[in-house]
Length: 562
Image 1 (cartoon, rainbow, N blue to C red):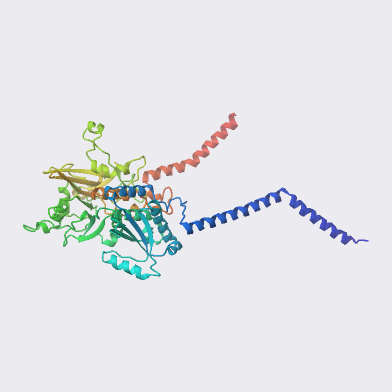
Image 2 (cartoon, rainbow, N blue to C red):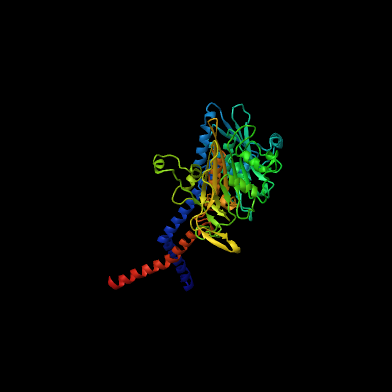
């Protein structure tokens, strides 16, 4: 006879068995098991695909650019520029060969994230132009003597090479010897935040494209920055200097008080001078004055040889009166008014002194000329902004603490010359300046003011035309880092376009954008103009209350009448 306790234990076992069977037969268990198996299979598939992709990458260099900014993809602008260079007549019968050399083994380049980005960018060029461009590696770690040999060779030519350098060489005549070369550090492919020292943008495409265009150019034009008048030192001009180098120039810094201007100079830059240039010094000393040197440069009287040339001048309200330099500008029909432009509508929210410039429109001598498709009267000025001003939402050029650039004469009569003076960038009509009145009082005047202008002279000598330009910017803050590196502004493209036209360059990487790692739709709130910021503030402030009101009215109407 079984005890009551034994019967209870058996019943308990039977009940647990039935509960387990019910659990297994339950829909939740079946679906849950299926979901678990599906998840495991999916994870296994992702893992296998990941291993295969990495294996292909390591074996064949396969890279798929899925980044929103297309960090590793060479843009169509670069491809078109290099194609144009390769199609030039002088390369028709030449076996052009370009070599990109890294001074670290490939495995080292692949192991570091920053190095890998630079390498992948270079590989894109080799893939796009396999018969003209190759990538080479020199293991400076295992074979330091090879790097030393390169260093000795290029040091004599004014170049410094290190293990983190990238060397671009070009063999123009197929004799297996480099005819042209340029170099940069891999770190130059990144834009760094000055405070955090962290990279926030990748500009490898700009460095490689400009490097390839530089080593395949017919010549290396020179840009000369004046010194000796309180201008920023070379280390303070690093960003502007780099832009000229990217455009294909060799940069020089010359104290024009004691040195003559290099005959190979194509553009002379006078940036934020604090003291005047030497002027007339008496009979017999004209050639030794700085103003005369600049005047001769703008007529290219070097050893009797005439060449195109240009001067860029950057001045604002902080620039003191400089009688000799001001007189030179006046001779070319230009002057800079020593006052600051403000605009409480067309400015960035940093402040009304961050003025957004307006692009000039073309104008014609007559409607017949316009209908006939003839070039506008202000052809040179309009050419500088035409591509930037196109479209409904043109990217703006921004002037910080801008000063009005006054066009004193639109045309200047001169023997054997055609001389035209034109505005390029202006303010909007809402801009204001403060003008001093008699008695120490001042008056605020609202209107449209020029922020940049150009005076262009064409000399006709023996039926040949030579172009000379004097371009004046009413600011000494044009190359502020934010305005140059941020794609929200057109300061860099406008300056590159100016370099191309004033420097008589065939190809310049004007439209290649710096690729920011974290690029939001509005960048920063400060990047919006004041009127746009106000517009969005009104929209966002009214949107939610408006939606609630409309919904409330709809519900009331439905309940009341339907």
